[in-house]
Image 1 (spheres, one colour):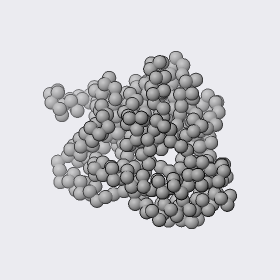
Image 2: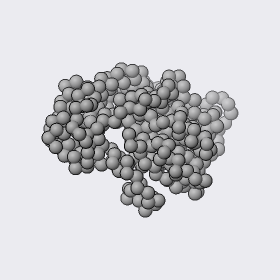
Image 3: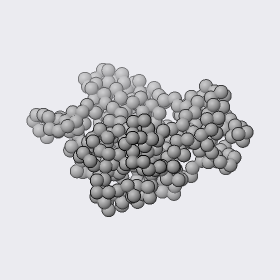
Image 4: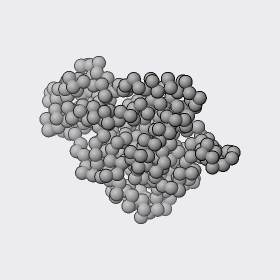
Length: 375
């Protein structure tokens, strides 16, 4: 079986975890946490970074920083993971689900703007597959209406919009280091704060609603309960594993690019009519998070995935539309979101991981071509 994903571990991770075992700080916010924070702040210019136990926790911190009130509305793409909406729903917001664009699963200004009204407070953008939404247009729209922008950058490490790193454009952002991501620590995430207004409160939320971070920096002589919050920071074990990955990010990204390009050379322009591989917008870079194609129908996708499974290749589709989910369908305002539904029915992801061999990638591509030309 060629698995869909295999988390990468170089060996340094184990060495660093052993260092944590010998240290006096295991619970979090120790030396490895600081190394990770410094990496992102220096390499990408992020204003403030705070590691979290998951990307979902990072999104929950984003939602808390927005200070939502009952009746406030948040615009979220329907084609995304549930955490993108759940974090804001927990804060009492009403979710207005936006359709995807026709060219790729990202939301567009054209789909966002009709949903804005006097109750709207936040726009959540998801950079699907690490490919940027049109952030200049979205930020201009947000400024026009006085709205906050949250970047769900779960897929987006080391990816750019023009010359700006994803996660560094909106007011706040969330990353994921889940085992399926380019850079992982099993389960983890990170809050990025780009707006100075939110930096101090973000640290308090991160530390269970206390000002302990200021205490550790010697800014106050004692710390206490100041605000809402939770135990969002991960242990040093997670941070140590993550640091080993970050030290090798260029190597990891280079190998993922190599596998991605094997697929692209074999498949782009060679698939039969009805099967497409989305193009990259001019303003976006590719961080090689995933390789996916669109089938002409749900039936065709099912047949392709079953065929590949029988040949020993594990593939997966992606999100089920949130607007028509069992939990939210009776709360949705009734609009049809046809592009979202199309991606949900037709998108299939191929295996892509660091240790995937050239022969494995070539075999997967060959099997895809064999089956699609027979259907």
